[in-house]
Image 1 (cartoon, rainbow, N blue to C red):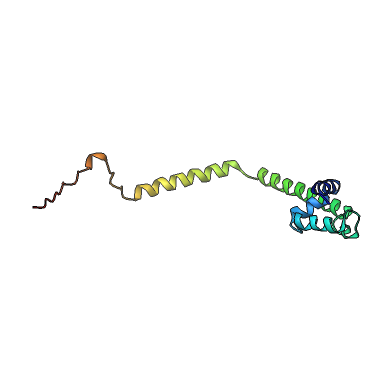
Image 2 (image 1 turned 60 degrees about the vertical axis):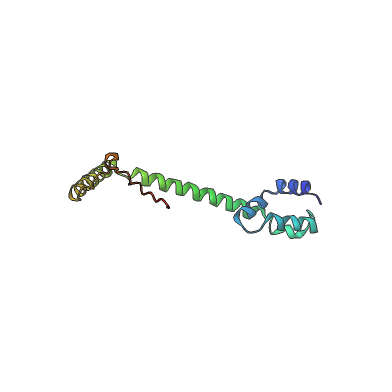
Length: 123
């Protein structure tokens, strides 16, 4: 069996892609089964059960839709005015805290003093 025929087999049976993405098996294992047993073996029944895959896809889509609706309802419930008031209060508190702290001495370039040149001459 060639890789190209295996690729065609996978294209015909999209459930194999979902199984590998879920982490239930690997492409290597599926290829080995394909190489040993071929396309028409009963070993593929557990991997190619179309009803289970379609139901799981429908469930996943409905779960995503429900999650998206929950996120939208959460965002709608946020009061932006209260958040703005809270941030303004936090800004004022930070400014007050800065006033309490002692100022750090600023280091400027004018304070630089070159080190004395120590030379040692051997006699």
